[in-house]
Image (tube, rainbow, N blue to C red; front, side, top):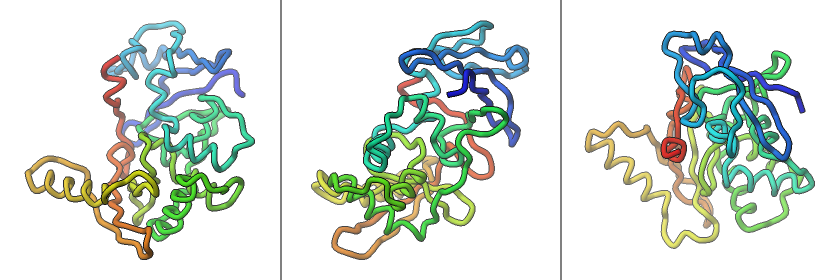
Amino acid sequence: MAESILVTIELSGSDISVGTLYPGRLDTVSFRYNDGYLARPGAFPLGPDLPLVSGTQPLHAFGPFADSAPDTWGRKVLNRAHPSRRMGSLDLLLGTNDFGRNGALRFWSDGVALAPGDGVPSVQNLADLLSTAHDIGRDRDVRETPRAQRLLEATGSLGGARPKANVLIGDELWIAKFPKPIGDAYDVIAWEFACNRALIASGIDAAPARREVLGGPEHRSLPPLRSRARRHPHPLPFRDERARRQ
């Protein structure tokens, strides 16, 4: 593990150096803003627990950087795909596919982005991704298999516990939400799509969505939703509701 990790934020297509992340003991980190960023017109704090002050600041539960790491579903995919690995929160953060990472933060070591942004599958791979997600949901053995690794690369840092994956439709990044193999009493995904249509029809600025219906007894409707956080051509900075309440 590197002694320090450079953190940048992508604004209008440029990577702006924000500060440095310092790994600590027992899976902890601290952060220090760069003097140049503090002096930058329009500079904003990365989170409520990281005010714009000089000096190193310790972080609780990775602070605003937690949104850039895998959440419940991503961690479950990782544990099923590579059960022999023992990875801490920082390993998960730095190992997330850079292209599929939520928000506009990027992490660098020796001038190299962590991890390089390739491997996001296309929408044509949805059936395979859904099948793998169902096997993981049923606790079937998928360890060290190429299809489990493909789903892991597609999962990125998407939040929540429902199965989902990043997919490419053309050159745009979309989020495909999957039905659960166990636990859905009705077609939750179809209702989510219907609610999305109702929001847009009401004039609310909701994320664009499209419905994909896959064949087979277990393959139901899937609404890929265009990612608002990594929207083409540039990612958008954001804070989730949990961070806003801190």
